[in-house]
Length: 277
Image (cartoon, rainbow, N blue to C red; front, top):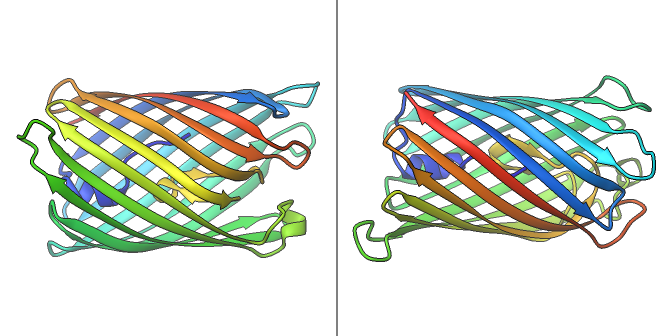
């Protein structure tokens, strides 16, 4: 379910396309879990007209369960607005809407409200902080995510250039009993290292430390099923077909606990196509 570069990386790379369109699809395979597999598809669209940028993402998820448990259907709709101040500051705010359909819980709605600020030096470094407020039935989740990223290396050298980023996520759950989690406070760290060499961009990523109900990828990804994750790691490989078009394939492996099952694993496979015009 991981998708999209963070706004920090987009800023550091000088993202300037007026429109960007990205259809994507993902397949998730589970082991040791009540879930069997999941299929996900969506379309991301952004429009940039300095100093404003609008991002929107529509997504559909279906989870197939084992042992006769009813299948789970989810539709997500995300909107994020950005405002760039001068050459070094960016502020943003957004909403992630979640619409759930399941046999025992039809037409259920959840939402995440969020905002943040970023300070960056072009192709040098960036630092910022995001705040997320997730509204669930009977409880809420607050998350604070400071982050730091920096560029190094020479794009025209044999090894290319690099971008490294670290995020620290503090997650507070107002009522762990209603949320169905063992703890009400979590600390988690996201690490990412990208290498840019010719038409290739290779990204190694990891998430360390337990978390539940986490919001990731700048608000585009929400872990709203109540599972407690232990860690995840993965790789994304992007190939630029031209200045306007690129394709990406990714893999992520995660370990998590469900309410009735421990030591569950998921393997996520992602493909996407990006075009700018």
